[in-house]
Amino acid sequence: MTDTATTTATTTTDSTTEMLADRYIAIWNETDAATRRELIAKTWAEDGHYLDPLLAGDGRDGIDAMTVGFQSAYPGHTFRRVGAIDQHHDRIRFGWELVTPDGQTFVIGTDYGEITPDGLLRSITGFFEQP
Image (cartoon, rainbow, N blue to C red; front, top):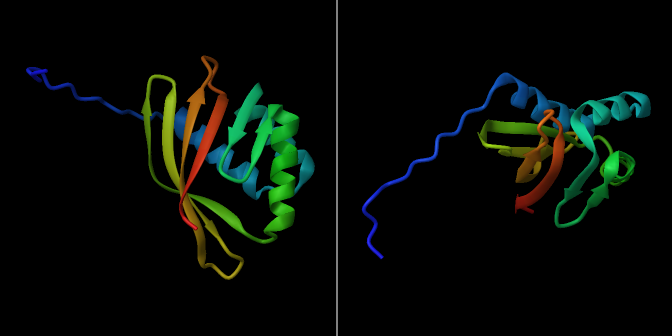
């Protein structure tokens, strides 16, 4: 097959998508149950789904329970978004790092997501790049 045409993908990220990704990160760091559940409601579709090599959560309640479990296992650890967000159509990709209470990077990774037409997360699939 001969490649006679080159296709380039344009990725754009608007402030709404950045706010969505930043709220998503904030959920992982929020230890106040009421505030976290409010963030989840503003960020995730009711039937949202999260999956990474260690965790999974279905629906807003499942995502909340998964987050609480993570926070219990890694107290004082915080997530930070790293770099720009790539977006095309209803898909996003962004990097993150998990930092220990003393400021050391514990894990880095990349999350891939799908956004609903009304601007909520339908799904996130996380990958770890450094254990």
